[in-house]
Image (cartoon, rainbow, N blue to C red):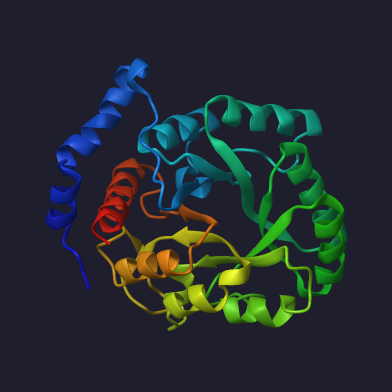
Length: 281
């Protein structure tokens, strides 16, 4: 069932104008930069690649304004080549602002050194999870690193053109005999780009589903483009219903890839749509 924007805005008791005007206030009145009420039914967060043109301080401010209290940082916000002390300082900045820094990624691991570095980086940051893409031949090493550091690895699918993990089904084929802390970050946008339905996958792989990238696409084709959540073809109400059905305990991270230079309005609209769906579900 598709739910119109008017319906969810009515449920939330706000208007699109009021939602977006808050971001003007964020710039002009920092004292109003207080976190919104967190969503108890689903741990909604932010994949910071959404704000790839912004600073870490801006990522923190925008996340708080939207009430996205959990965040996974991409390397432009917490560089992979930083010293251990610098990584710890950046992680502490996020936590001191009242946000949960649960993960980092997507981190690619193309050789042994990159895999070692990724887990050392995550350990210094105090992360519980890496969202990563390890080469197949590195999986035995990664399995050992997961055990050594007690850090989960959520392998991310990248759809068409990804020779490693095009689909979550490809991930399953490679990890089924590995440590249970190696699981999935299912990117629902990339799933539909290869003509598959992400909803049954959420149920099928629920036991090792540790992260989820929330987004919407304009069409279910390899050249599909990201759009504001609710404007595209993904059955977002069905996704939310399945997450509730499986009592999903991981993170639902918004990865809004459209409008890289000015993503806040579209991200706010996407968050509002999902919150409306959750209230009506």
